[in-house]
Image (cartoon, rainbow, N blue to C red; front, side, top):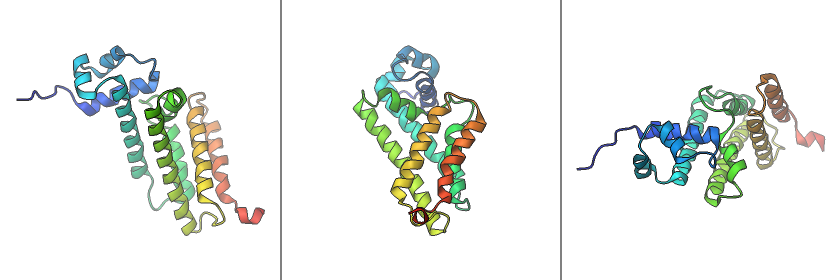
Amino acid sequence: MARSKEFNEVEALDKAMEVFWKQGYEKTSIQDLVDQMGIHRRSLYDTFGDKHALFVQTLERYESLIASQFRKQITEDMTTVESIRKIFELAIYSDSTYPKGCLLVNTAVELSLLDDEVSQRIKAAFEQTEKFIADLLRKGQAKGEVARSFDIGQLSRYIHNALIGVRVSVKMTANQQELDATIDLTLSILNNDPAKQS
């Protein structure tokens, strides 16, 4: 008869995610993980695999938490600007119990050139967020809130790149006015009509 686990796997995974989020992959040791997760080393390996396998699972967990926040806090009655602003706010004004910045962006900076598996996962996650933004922009065009002359692919890429930049900036400044001003300037593009500028 299989022995039942003496710990909650999701809670342990969340604790591992926070360690990687704060310290990065390379600076995190198995002992750091064992201490923070509150489980035995053998339990870590048996349940999650090695350090790399555990790290990939924390990235998956992080992605699911972000997607859940989007679904809960971005509603149909919001305008396009309100919806996209909420994405920025969720990225930079997260729960104070979590580290500053974005685990995906941190990982992209640290490992994208060193770890192909992680690089592909980060790329897929970024593409998913960009697609989410593009879908909001298309709805905005249908409602007349976004000029139809915009190329949605280019516009969503521009906004997503700005989002990545803000996620980096939040690690370096606690000045909320500066961050808000950056968001305002980024979203001001939606008030323009490229057709009228040509």
